[in-house]
Length: 479
Ligand code: MG
Image (cartoon, rainbow, N blue to C red; front, side):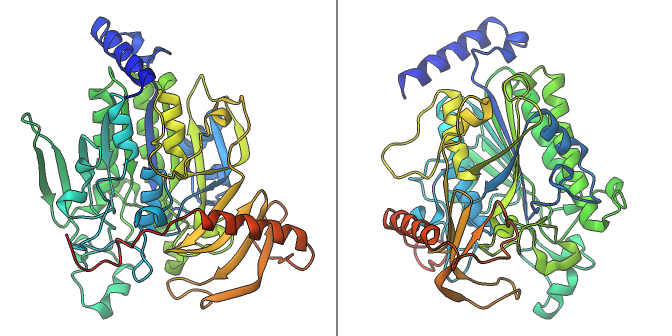
């Protein structure tokens, strides 16, 4: 453990011993707590502060009004599993095998998953003395060795994969089931996993199928309980909601809550959950010492039409490397440290959270492997420039597009889930200026050959620095 981390840990221990429950729990000497609320398949345009026309998100809008709203925040993949891998490991999925070229996400009983050598955000923070709790969807492998409590989380309450898996219906009836979803159509387990007093990990299935109508509420209430239980020590709460991934469910008190139909109801319940977290932090006197981050794992699943969300002005959605698939909301809230009502157009990635949170908590990034994690803390504090000027867009192991500054070149484009085009290789590549044309409508490759040459050469340099690990998702043998 680095010296600074040991000192921070010592300080925390002293403070906790001297004054449990006192105002010192928000002392500037204590490293900040971290809360990540991560929606599933929520689009860039689904929040009020991002221009949602009908859906109401007052609590998320409050995060924007009291904190920092990022307009150029990205994920590392346009589908669930590799996106979550990027957030938790601070590395591109191609580097650690958490991608697939044959299948794009992990399915129940697959042999692959997150490897023990990976250092997750939860492991890094736990090494600094944080209590680590996870409430929601995992999706990095469902065999016992892959589950969250083996990868840095002290406690996990949630579903191991997507809420549309384990269908109980014949294939021809599966798609229509989303139009009138019933709990019993998807036999997904709700699991609790934690260490017992002897230090052994105990994992139990609480329900199967999980009652998805109450899942958003229960994730939030479990997270609130965890925050209250750990108010006197640093904590990391990871709250990856199962919603609004189809099938869409919400609690009875959110039925017809929104004028934007079932999808709107679901988003408004997620917004309620964020309100529960913010209110709890304030009630416990922890708000000034807690960084709350909100985002989504990929863009809206537009193949589900009115049951999918909106990407705002961005093109396409989930599954694709157009910006609608990978640019997501990014809200940071940290009263007293992040100045209120700031909108930034700096580029950020969920893979940057690891470097950022370690920077804020006195940790250091692993130096025995190549990382894709940059420290965004200067932007959060308002005392420096953003470190990220480039953004790769991968589909599986292939680099489809690359962004440098405001320019984005597409080398390959491809539709997803029956939408849009077949795979197309572009020579010359397509080029868009995202500042003028966030919808990627107007190809300017012919007008700006010098820009295209620069973006292409930077993309090739990036690619040359990435060793592609064998796919864990496509693996069919082994443990
Ligand atoms: Mg997703």
